[in-house]
Amino acid sequence: MFIQTQQTPNPNSLKFLTEKKVSLVGPIEFKNKSETSVSLIKNILSINGVTGIFLSDDYLSVNKDANSEWEDLKHIIISYINDFYDQGNECIISEKNMRSVAQAMKREDLIEDPRFAQRLQRYKNMDAFVAEIESWSETLTAEQCEAAMNNAGVPCSIYTATKDLFDHPQITERGAFKQMQDHDGPFKIQNPPFQFAGSDTATADSVPELGEHTLEVLTQFLGYDAAKAQQLCSSGAAHQYTQPNQN
Image (cartoon, rainbow, N blue to C red; front, side, top):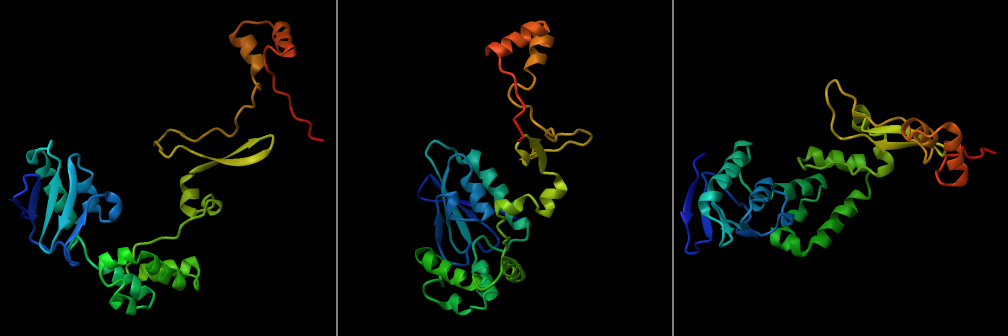
């Protein structure tokens, strides 16, 4: 897609003109990545030197700080824009998710509700909007909510509580956790998140107790004889692990 750039009266602001729609909700500005979930906006705001983005119907303006040069930024921004539209996106900002959420809840009236009809009003009335969703979701199971949202095209998934995480099928299949053992009983610990073909990166089955190998260290590595090693342990100079009384 051919993207044109156009200078503005502000030397630290540059327009990017696309061949597709940019915003279907009117003019909107972003200065922080936390203000949006749109990958393109997040990516552009992550560029060193970029301070904000303004989106209109058919263009977006990017603002930079005075110390950055457009020649260093333009090709990165254009690359991000092309990648975004090449993925099949027809616009950057739309009301699709809002409409899909309302349809999933069978609450199409929310689309026309003046508190939520426009993005800015939704931000101002977010507590009320969340309350509407919670009023709907508390009548269903988590699985039913997820199915309704996904069927309506809303990207979402169930939040997995810690107690359920260990038995999650994907976690189990990847061997993300290893069961270990100590004198208090079995427990699970996370394996390294990376895996290598032909190499075992899993953690050990057990962890030595404090002082469990003191005698071996003293005799095999530090050169003490067995009697001297035992004397050091008995005097408290070195610690030797003692099996706890099971009674």
